[in-house]
View 1 (cartoon, rainbow, N blue to C red):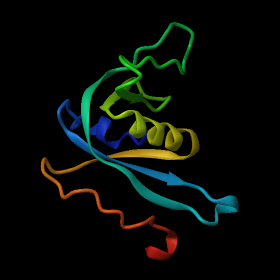
View 2 (cartoon, one colour):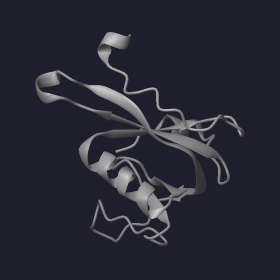
View 3 (cartoon, rainbow, N blue to C red):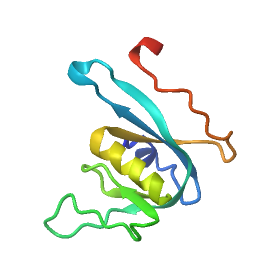
View 4 (cartoon, rainbow, N blue to C red):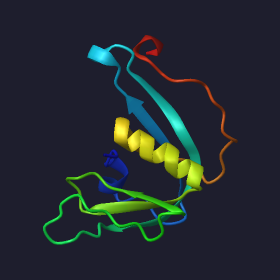
Length: 123
């Protein structure tokens, strides 16, 4: 699931750019880390989650080749991001294996810089 702070604050809008941050757990709590996995990704839509009656976790993106759509199971909103096929693979891997959060950035941001993962030792 994704973090819901931006959805709850009702500040995320189509056209905004977000960074996608993923957190992964190591074995027995060791080796936990957080890393920015995608940067300056365009938000295409924010709105109600499209569900099939009786299927709580069914999510139907508009175009699976171009958009990554996801939502936390307990919320009634979806965020649709404009991503490349490679970015979709990265996003889907993170969703399947960790926690994903969206960070709303300034309209103009510096190009992606890989500063490495953040661990407990960095805090």
